[in-house]
Image 1 (cartoon, rainbow, N blue to C red):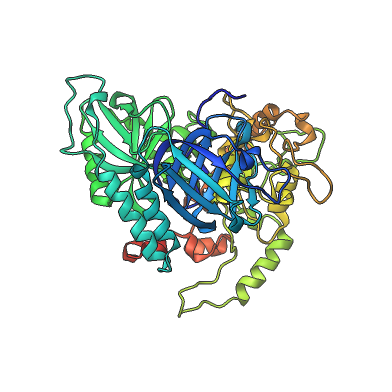
Image 2: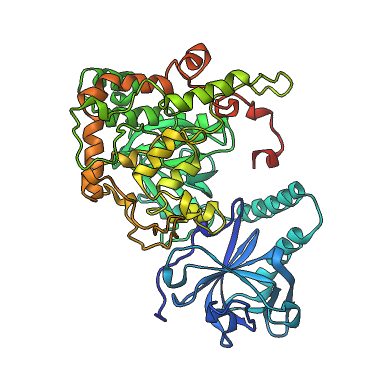
Length: 554
């Protein structure tokens, strides 16, 4: 267990809104004790421990080379002091708290450790650079520490941190030596600074377009590939997207099914890049994937319900790379209790003409009573609504994917899983909540109907995560499935897929589509269809272009 392995650190180890700056080889030595007897020996290690120090805007993060030791995060806000010992080439931090994660590479709740009597040197941690001079990174750390400890307003601190980031990025040169062919012609006069978007992560870097490829060079690479390359000939389609509700992103779909979601500085730059990519001879975007063509294919029975829903999600701006605009699929079945299920029986299907919140007549009566008693507020612009929550949110996506993508919830909830009673533990319990609760109107995600090689993976706790115990004394482990699928997640997903493609659903799916993408989204039709949500969930409720304060975006 003492030999080095692949990196455990990634940007999901950072806090929300945190910026990664630099990475240095160094050793860590500790003189700490802890009030927690189960804490790692790292806190009391007397020998220097080799690893990498990540300099970030909220924390110093140390990743030991040895998997036997956890990654350890030192929040600036918990530090009593951070000083340089020039004679010994040491950076010394005295802190009241540190946070451990990923010991032995195991994902789980972070371990928050309070240091006993740090003022008596128990919280002393000594960093010594392995190759760099101490001055090379102490200057940056000192500036960040000074900003975070200052009494300035949060917005001012954020601006100062951003200035540091921009200065460092401006010094990084784009390396064209990574081009595949020496005869590639650059189509941009200089590389664009863009963000590559993934769930809860923005990876900033430089983008260059050539006659044959797109090249993305991250400002900070966490893999052995410092330059990402995308063949123009592999592009299937390109969509203009929104990011933070602004029209400044592009999503490029490739023939293998993977995609690249990029956020640019503004709409003009985004549109120019779109034009440049699509006019390249090797980029042949398939017209057959247009919405009108897909609709005709679906109406004629030449496209499955699953593929058509995926097309609608894609065309409407929903992306697997963005939890705020994640693809959405409907609940189809209502029976998760029986030992067997007959998909030819229409009674096992949900009424697709109604939103989830209107499926239960008793609940709908209460919702409508509240709706009619609720006045519009002309002063605040808040219009009355039936549902204060929504059918698709980042929290719902993480709820369903906690087993296959646990780092998303850990990042979103500051190193903790949600309470066991609120985790996705049973399909029947989730349906019961969506059918009865006044605050739960969530729909599903594509994984419930995806019968590819990953079918049902999100339902199994293959990583053996410690997800806690519910109040009814039941351990949260694998998702409890209906008896009719015999506990087999693959059979469960395949059954749902057959239901999705059934004659009944094929006859009524257009009614659900009208609720999500069609004429029943807004206006009188939405009110008649009991489909009115909180006003801020609708596009255009706020003119995002009028917001100049970055803090308001955050």
